[in-house]
Image (cartoon, rainbow, N blue to C red):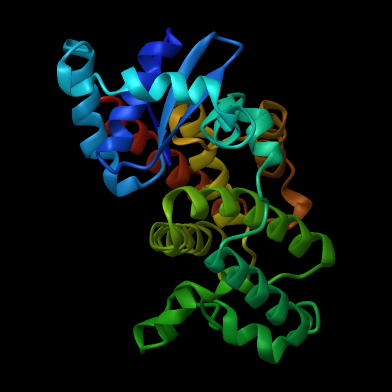
Length: 294
């Protein structure tokens, strides 16, 4: 789902929204009371290019006859019980923070799979204390600076360190953000995109930690910082994508990131954090720039 158009007048916004409906482009119209604007959201990501073409044409010729579909529809919308039912779902007071707070916060299928797998590994490994099981998930069991197991075919080791956690707080922190930020991304962008994002971010963050910190590490926090970076940048540069993070939360996440680097005795995979954050912010920024150039 994405916001593709903003209008100052309700009547004009309604005209364009009705045109999208006539083209079988599922959409919603929401009022941003703070800015006194009307926003049109397209619900199906695959229909966004078609909707954008229509919007560009509408901006040039809003009075063209093909857009003039509201003559018979508009009075019905205002007079009927749309104000009680459909209007509630199609004409909403738009406040991104309030909307996100009220949303269904349940994780997507892949987000839930990550959480279940991480909790299962945490319990099976005796909260990260069973060396025999932990070693199977490490990027390598060797301390010679090589990825010998990976090179010999155990490719999954590039990913599996993300499922290791060594304390209750460690797994609670990471699973909370997988649920919250991961759930946002998966629901907005789809499970396939989310799977690719996790896959790439896990590899980069794990390799960064291995390169600069050694093989003895585990945890989802590199991926979490990737999720944070993506949502944070998209929220700043592409708010129409509907992703949201509180400014206070962003400050806390960044403060923790730099504090962990400053205090060496925390025993935290700082380079995994860095690899994830760089990946997420870069991905989010490139995505935002590409969208804003359309």
